[in-house]
Length: 154
Image (tube, rainbow, N blue to C red):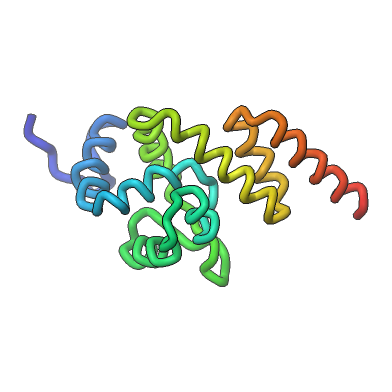
């Protein structure tokens, strides 16, 4: 099936064409390591290098994020210091769907690692979110209790 050229407004067609475009023109052009980084971190609502290191097991997430940011690859800084980033919503959804398809067992692992990291940082709301996504009920309760005790002291 011949591909239609991009129009002024954007891609022709629907989600399938968008997925094909992202696969053919963005993700497949990345190194295997970068593809793995993108897939594993796609479940995060926001990203920073230490969190990405914990999620991926890599030790170069700061360099990965800097390269992705410089390339304009659907990543944007969300704080003035350039520590925190976020993927474009459609891109994150596309990547997350790919992770769920290709490595469903990693989904729970990513959420558990994120929950643990956020809890260690005292970022309780994010810890609760990821613990619930992982089905890690005990971790979710611990994070909620920590969050509640913090709120009661204010």
